[in-house]
Image (cartoon, rainbow, N blue to C red; front, top):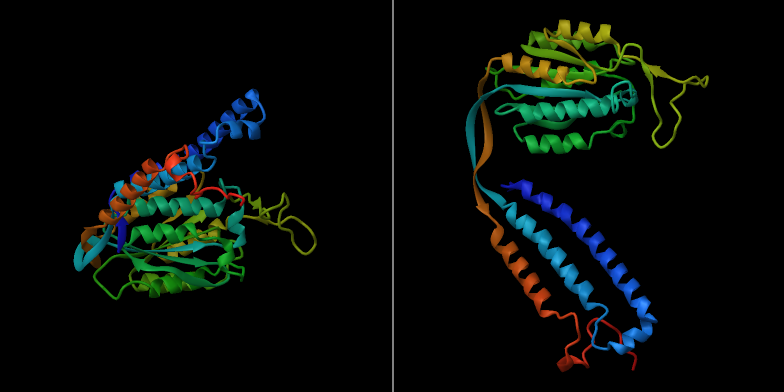
Length: 343
């Protein structure tokens, strides 16, 4: 497993585009100043030792060195020893609705983005628990098998959009059934399913699926995203909204009654997701109430530092930058590495 021990140093990379802008602006000011003295081509003939390309090469080497230096400070490491450890926690399967209705903007910035941010913060609050991710619309499929790798969970979360499933609908029952089959075989551990949906265009086997999950000791919680009064569904890349066959704008509404019934039959909690963080706090509190059991996880317990190779790259780049002079060296006047000389 690869990781950065100090990933905050990677923010240094944001300096690179700023330095590029500053460099280009400085060159612009320099050319503008030269024009005040005369024709640039004539000025170049008067300064034959000034290289046109060497400053750009030196600056490029410096930028690359800064990039590698930020990686060096972030301390890249490879896992070298994989061990099975036991930790106290629970197993959480999240079933996220990605149907087109989740693009409605009655919750800002839209229902789906709000749900993804909620899940991201929920993952940040987990410690020794395991988490898995299922997405569904007209079908349901596993986006991330249950794992204790929270970094991967957040990476997969970022890639989620309605285009992942072409068949539209809200197959909550299929999502619950798939989630119930996705837990580890370990029996003496608390397990919960968190369904995040607006309940729109619901297909009718969700209550049965919730009851079956509850019978297996799996709690089914439901987070309802949206507002009961509803909202139109925007079409990406346009200022229009989705319309029905008659040309009327489709208004999608939170099916709160159905969401409450699913949570009730699943012996879980129903929470409406609004523009505050109250839903996140409520579901975190519910998870924390669950009995923590020993969870077996394979984790890397030893990591080898990988800074040596990067250190040599940085040193070589800096040495090269120092050795390349901005002016042409008279000892090498007949060598043209950075320009084409007509014979």
